[in-house]
Image (cartoon, rainbow, N blue to C red):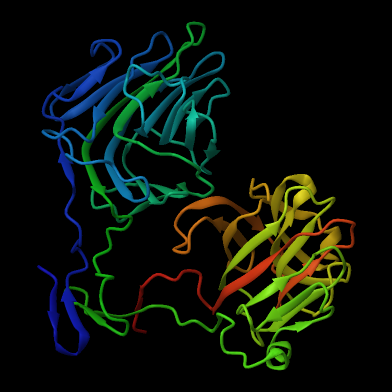
Length: 480
């Protein structure tokens, strides 16, 4: 059934409808548009499948040019959004007696002439038959590195069965992976999934590849079949419900009789700092402990970070903050950075209006100039300047503009990402913390300094806070 649009913002369709038709729907008819490092010895195409025996004896990598005008999609593969699906049958395997058999399957910037261990950009799954008797599944990505550069293992291993694999690039800095047990991609395989963040500079992924690790001293193999390759370019969701519609629309699934309402999340509080009539009005909303360090600027319509070299702060009372879901975005411009002795500046939502040397609970991040890095941080009744729950974003503070996003996605998870653009699409770095569920009762957004000889200088602008939401995207919610 085609999705239909009706008066009163009513939309009708089936639960099985897909908005986007594939850019490529490929059933492996022959070897046209494929290249093979071993002349199709270990990898052959027959009966609409790629039949592959991966061992470590020699490079038997294969690649399919996704951008080919005749048998591919005929356009450049997006660097920010695509969906890849394929059938994956694990036929058999022999675990290595030393080391491990390793196969990478996914999207790469390099064809089959560039082997598994050579430098390439990629996003892939990685199958390994280890000498310890385990059959492991990993996700991996790299910017100009081998196919096991940033591995994260799934909680479950593979078995001899038919899987259906979905890899989705959701942005320039994120991707997801999920194994399914059915060709409709509705029944997930427990424990074989991943959601990866922090992807940097991974571009030009024009080839679908199967690549094997080579080491003549490693025995064992993995035998598999790949089928039903589908690729959607420029999209990151195959939802059956349209998102380019008015907020407040109603979707009626005619086969399930379910009703969904769609909306963009409402901004709980936003401030571009242009509405304050004078300094007195600004100071009443954004309260500073030291006007020489932090203060609202009604002339420039921003908050000035005059210097962050002392235990002082400026705060805004958000009144109520969810203990499980919220999203905060703002623009930070640093005008003095790069040579400040222990220059530290916190951006933080906490339970008190206290400084960084006072006990409190809170979530945020801080620039640490002298350490050439930026850190996500979480505090549960302790001093922020003495916290041990941190993770770095890999960003050296510099005199530039950052678009910061802090979001609590559950009672126990918190993520910070800094972007280079106001559309929050090009990530500079990200960090996710596993936090205590006891971090509750947050209320005050603060910029805090640290007592030292140096100090960062800059401005805060374009502040937005979404309470009870973890995304600014249009979402559908089922009527209860």
